[in-house]
Length: 295
Image 1 (cartoon, rainbow, N blue to C red):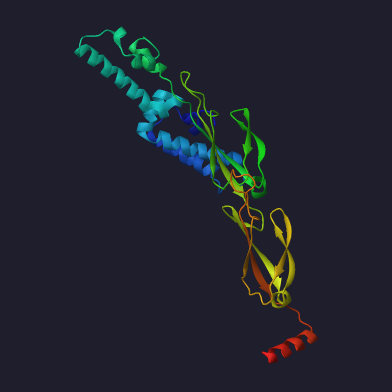
Image 2 (image 1 turned 90 degrees about the vertical axis):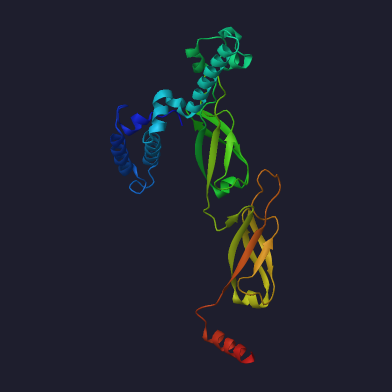
């Protein structure tokens, strides 16, 4: 998450041509491609870095900004605007009264850190640090309850609370834990994207859970009680006589926790899958034959 030297990533000098950049990128992309390195986190990271480096250096305009401003290249436009404002202020002052440098507005003076030379002013503009992005992989059971976890970002440990009910793909912001600000500007922020693996029998849709359970023919016809699993334990259900295949039953409040709503849960929807008996005995066949004649 620290500043990345894109030339170093691609293994090329700063004098590299566009063709050199393309060749270096293709070589690294083939070497570290996820399809050729399954479950290799290091190769995956190098592949991402190579892509990022290529996107910046293969674009002439972005490369120019990167070469001039280094790790602050994304703020290049802001630097340029600051310089233009200064030039405009100078020309206006000279045109309408010939004001000296000491007569600049308070805004302009504070923006550039006081009365300094025109060359040094642009170097003292305060900018927010670079935002960092991280991806945190968790199991579905991990986000059923709120819990604390320690992350290591730029060699610093950050203790965060992960609220119950967080969604797959959801992003949260940790203020001030990004890159260091430029010229005493504020630090950037840390954005964490959550990747939630579901290794359970339950399907999640927002706060609701869905699960299918097998129901034998006799319970379906005559009714009775069955025990089903919920996310946090077992419950008994009463099956009505003559229950049809595919019947859905809602268990209120037995779903997933609602994000940042303490004590509130979605619902669990149970779908019955009717199981036809197999390996019938001769006696069972006779009885089913009798039943069929009655119908």
